[in-house]
Amino acid sequence: METSDPELPSFIRTWNQFYGIVIAWLVFLIFIFWLITLAFE
Amino acid sequence: MSLTDWIVLCVTLLVIVIYGVWKSGSSKNIDHYLMGGRSLPWYHVGLSVMATQASAITFLSAPGQAYSDGMRFVQFYLGLPLAMIVLCVTFVPIFHRLKVYTAYEFLEQRFDLKTRALTAFLFLIQRGLSTGITIYAPSIILSTILNINTVYTTLFIGGLVIFYTVYGGTRAVSYTQLLQMSIIFSGMFFAGVLVVKLLPDGVGFGHAVKLAGKLGKMNVIDWKFDPSNRYNIWSGVIGGFFLQLSYFGTDQSQVGRYLTGSSVGQSRLGLIMNGLVKVPMQFLILLIGILVFAFYQFNRPPMFFNQYEVRQVKQSPYAGQYNKLEDQYTAVFEARKNKANDLVKAFDSKNTVQINQAQTALKLADKQATDIRKQAIGIMKKNNAKANEDDTNYVFLTFVTQYLPRGLIGLLVAIIFLASMGSTASALNSLASTSVVDIYKRLINRTASDKNYVTASRIATIFWGLVCVLMALYASKVGNLLEFVNKLGSYIYGVILGVFVVAFYLKNIRGNAVFIAAVITEIVICVLGYFEVVAYLWLNAIGCILVILIAVGVNMIAKKAFILDNGE
Image (cartoon, rainbow over all chains, first blue to last red; front, side, top):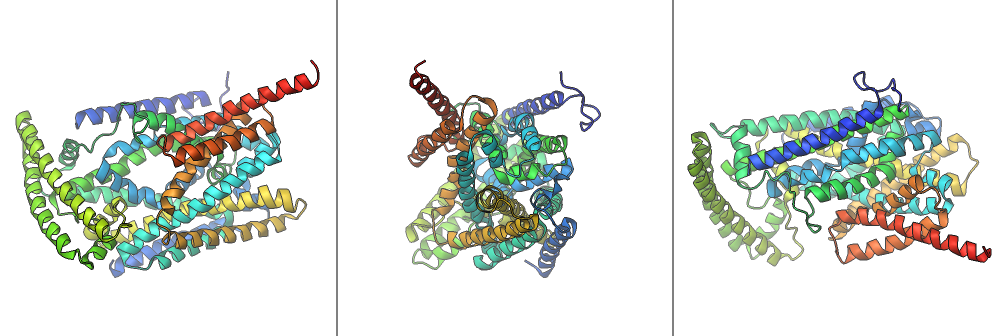
């Protein structure tokens, strides 16, 4: 298991957690963009 | 432009160059000159990576693209966050651990000298040619808008960049990019706010976006899979992922940026910042284009935005026909404006039937305007078959110079110069690094002093700077060069990425196998690209996968032959 890195922001424990946040952010953006597409059709 | 705008433009550019030169300090060794002493914090790395990718065309073209084609271009960037993760996991730790100067240096440690030389050579060709275009493309647009000869704008951008890149090396590049990006963000924010303010009374942000949506411009996500369609979610996520991974992982202009990070963690944080910010940033830049589109529903836009081409046709025997179309366009615009006002009223009434009726009427008026524009382009082509029929790059700057207040015009023109300078500076720095580290230091003079290598790096920067400026000056003489160079990246990146993927993940494959695979794949990609078998974004993925498959195949054949030769 990856250990905590002092260079990470305080609210994130591991790099893998950070990568998970990036993926979640991308999924969230795609979802929002899709809603925008539907809303303004 | 007014005197105030010229002052704002000149002061902004001077302040940035002086700041960059002042902060860079003196470089006594090659590590400091090419890698900035590997001491920069994550936000420097992140902004530098973003400034390197965002050329002037990003800020000129993206709003124009949204104006004519809608928001769908944002899908092009959806693969970027995923590429950042792969870089952080694989590329960054290895490059940092081996303390390489260039990405290609690693390939010799993993494979052999010829693979390193091949990839470095492909990079030098691709980046050397495309950097000329990075200078040329905004130069021609600025010269049209500002009424200055292209030669002066090219020499101005090129000269300024060569000066501070040669003087301060990579630290000057990073420090100027830090300030450049801050100014670019602020300028684009003010431009967005002002477009909304310039909309007619009773038309707000919501109305503008709804109106653009009713005309098909809010097409952010397209789920339909179509390999020939350049922008849908699949080409964006899959094709874009390969493109961004090859660009950030194997193009020295980007590798050189994140290797300036003071540690693996700082480089990773910089790349993750890029992964989190880039997509929303592109969305907002495109949204400015949508707002400009809505603005031009109520204010008469030029029938064709590139005034150089308009002047050409107006000085030709076709002037009468063109002017007649201008009159028709004005009449159709007035009708379209009324329909747009009807639609805004319908939005306020919230009556669906009324909204649908107004939308149909507006679409019809818009089609009439589009048809007249097409006829005008037809006349331009009749007059000059080589006339550029794409005026996307001129939309935003035309709006800026005609409608924004004094001072802000100068600032936004400065942004175009700054964006061009930022990406050009990184490119020159990377071309110098590759020339010196992969060729001069490796093949010509292996035991020279650090001072000698710094001098060689400075000479290489000047050399590539001059090559790029000459390319930019020559580009105006060759019509199809721009298109050729734009596609060149897709021809080369996928192959180089394939070599790196084999290097990282297929430990048993040796140098000869990957070298043969790279050469064969490059030939196949050139054939596929030349005959336009698939959209160019897919060439990156195909190139990468082919290199891997062929390398595995060649390796297996070589192993079998070895076994047979040894009688086992």
